[in-house]
Image (cartoon, rainbow, N blue to C red):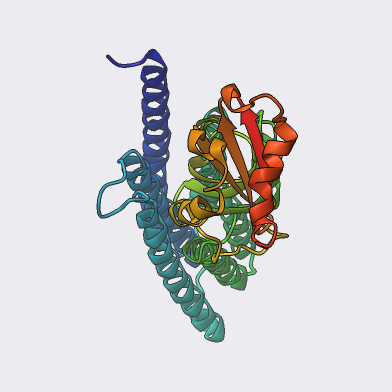
Length: 388
């Protein structure tokens, strides 16, 4: 039977996906219409800046497809070949997109500079170029506002980034508007200057896409404020004394977390495991981008104590202790032995029945009998007895 909690989560995930697709598709249609209109009108009205801005709009269309592709594959579960999921597909696609944007920007700038070096080739843009540029400013700002509403509602960094990409197109259209207006009143070189400016904007967007994607590919950690939010969320879990070795990395739109948490060394394995699962589930629930958490349990702050790998493990230690305690009658009645590996030494805890405390035998004297044969062993810190 499906648990209601998981049904709610699946429903929320599906709603988020559908909203992302709807918002992005609406933006894509507008980007396509604007891009084609600006390129066609740029050619007809002799405006290099408007043509460059049309290419910029089509770059937004390419980004929209990356968002749609990422949103689709982000819902796929990890498989045997991709145990961490498919998020890096989005990252690689983004690097490729950034490279194409830089190449397009270089072509636009080169063409505009070539025209500026040949003043006779400069042409005066027509009135309709100005109209299309003005429509672009209004349309792209509307897309930005519409997308940001969804981004804030679903706390989606991917949608927020796409919204800002749309606003960058609106800003470039303002630059084009000024360039066309200047050319129309006699400063014909302003249109070419505006084209170079738009080319630089496109190059900057491409560089930012590549830069941030490469940071993800080399497992750069999350921003400091997000790491601090993760830290505070972990420390708020009951049973967590402290934490260290907190590591984060991005995987597409998701974040992965590795952390060492310190708990009471006397806890049972099951309780310590329960605390670690509580940490994992709390982070996934409270930190929107966190998709998976690996929690390592520490009984002590092992940053300040060097791990001693040469300490005997249980089977070996039991074999060593058997002859040491052979002369103690109570040793035959040990119900359980707990071993605590702390600060590079072993603390031994024995569980014995009360019946071993015969007349004249106190718990302290019996503990002394068990501890005395081990006094010369540097790796044994102490022996404690418990009775039931």
